[in-house]
Image 1 (spheres, one colour):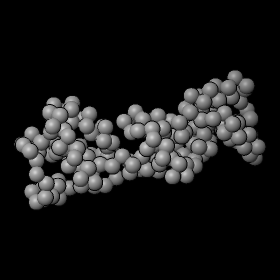
Image 2 (cartoon, rainbow, N blue to C red; image 1 turned 120 degrees about the vertical axis):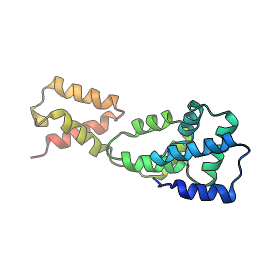
Image 3 (tube, rainbow, N blue to C red; image 1 turned 90 degrees about the horizontal axis):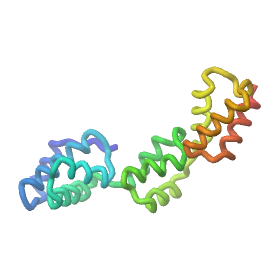
Image 4 (tube, rainbow, N blue to C red; image 1 turned 30 degrees about the horizontal axis):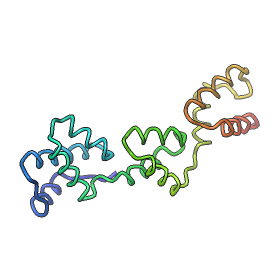
Length: 173
């Protein structure tokens, strides 16, 4: 995530970018303030500006402004999201979460293919250990294992991967 400075933004705004009216300038200022708190997708930022009551024209100009200076970039957002969620979430869950944020399915698939996503087994191990609450995997009843399998399946993990991790855990000394 990039760190933005309102001082730098104001200097850029005064020297090289012109807005059609004062509302557009306020919308750009609001967009920059929102991006100071956290990285956002294009869709999230547009939605947020709309909720703030800015006109469509002001929102469009504000979005053009932040894109012009590279403050918002959906591809970078997906790459960062993948990097930070690796080992915590399944590919399906990541895909779903990014889709909810308004990122196109094509872009998500493209970045996922370019970025070698590994870590599902580690994520499954982590979730299983949380569910075990100190028990050993081999000490679980058939029903308890079934509940964990179902839980992991709902999280988007493939059954083959879950079985592989469970058998690895069962065989650990």
